[in-house]
Length: 490
Image 1: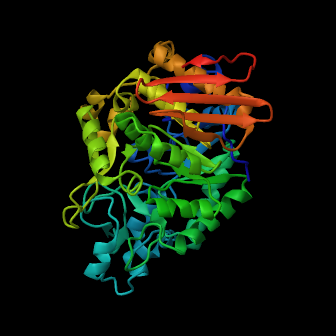
Image 2: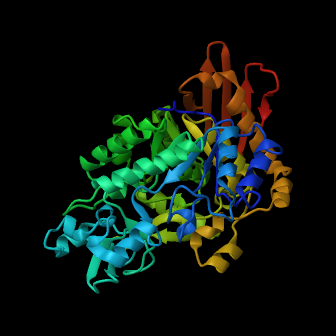
Image 3: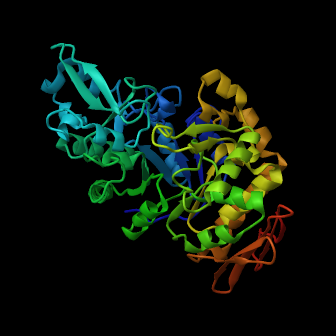
């Protein structure tokens, strides 16, 4: 298995920086050469029928509008490459599901898809069991399918979709030998391109059991992760589970030895900027493991619930959400909240991190905190370029998350690279990538006076310290001397 890489990593869509993977390669080989020593997390570049790549049809081809398989190999040759495998689902337009729609249970692929009757043998789901399921689309998580050859109705599980009986993402049954063979084939294909790491997208939804939320159900989730990690290991890959959950479930990932995301940091930094109080942020940074992946902004929204529940007080969480809405955000809401008696239903806040932080200084300060945090900092392309809320993209797509998914031409990228906000972040990236102090596993995090936070890294004789002032929204770096790197204000 590949070792965990703690160097800065870029995260981008295949067409967001220069329009193609080839354009991205050009930027990373020239204008942005050496910026991301930890490589690239390329969001799904495969043929897909929906959800901007997250409804994959197959994993052995690149969507032609993004480029070629050779472009993917070239990207992997520049620095470590992370790719997603949507382990919970496959596109409704995939050859496997289309064969099931044609032939039903006579299809050789039929067993790889999750049907309710595999869990409730009568096929009838008790109302209480249905109410317990954590929903990601309106109504229920099922899809009615009419089999072409027989006219018979089948019901399949489809966690994600836009309506009660519409979905392009059909859930897989991880227990099926057919599904396990598919995982092995997909992992093998991506490893052949030079991929180092597989992000297990939506992995928590594979754990389905009657009477539960069918999300991160124990002990099934640990059996699932162990199985996927074993398959990945056969191909020289490490796995990175992608899980949005309460803090107790996230800590369980640490206890079972898995790398994971820290989806608390984005909101916690914004809350510290809002209140000027660093205490919760200091406590959080002091407990992060060395194998965590940190983010500020991503292709999805800034997590609110369940990620920040129990971390930020409810009233403060409401106030933070209201502030972000004032700054132009839209909300991704918890489905069925009203029916369950939940009056605060913010799930994720869709907004650019520039607007969320309130200013370029706020964005740079937040980035400095992220890049001095434990683990691997993953830097989203739009925040790197200082991109504002893209309301035109929301209007054009009808998708709230498009506010932070702007596509840039090569010319636009190069113009943004020259901007002050991006150059300030570039300097931070260079310090995190090259200063010897970051060879340590953990920093020392403490208060540095009223409304100030200090994050200090030490390794042998080398040291590097960030002092962040939440009142003035300024960041200053002090360090032991090292060629090419300078102390001073960020």
